[in-house]
Image 1: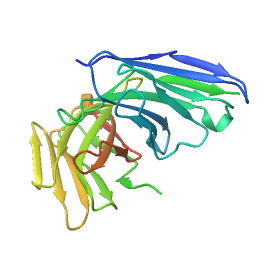
Image 2: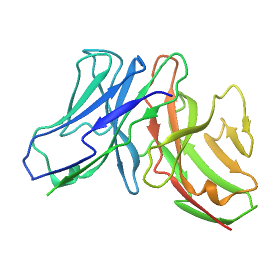
Image 3: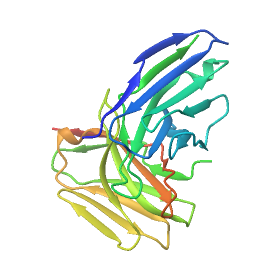
Image 4: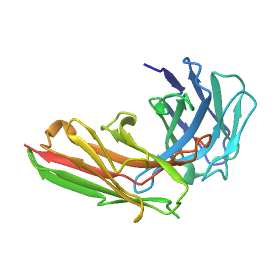
Length: 113
Length: 113
């Protein structure tokens, strides 16, 4: 079973704060994704990447930056956090081209006060 | 604008009944349609998936029916069990080599014993 680990599990920050969410996968998957989950909206794609140094823009990228430093590590950066970014964030990875299923981490609950 | 739409938002059925969850999409280039389920306080996981080369995919009590002309699909859960109570997400991706997955807002299913 693919392992995707997110940290932290919970984060509280204030408006204007700087937040970094981390994700590590240990199954050598090429694709990694950041989604946010909000009631009534399902899962919305923020950014994704197909390898180290690559970044693709998702459907709701405003206010977010991301960086894929290695095959294993994908970071989501909120440089000026706003209350509208309060959400549950999921990282996922997939072996695109093989078994395409997404393997999700346990999520990071972010609250921006 | 939601590229993938799901209905109903919530559904309650009795144990043993068939639950029908609906999904529709706009983009005719979508060619892979996975369904994910998510239990409370857990992350989403792949349940079943279909490609348009076929109009039906079955896995035990779970069946996807696909209508390419109408851009609609549905998930049928026969002999519903209380353990099937979860939120079900329809997702889509477009074209081999394009591993961007967009999700619907989800259907919350409750099965009453």
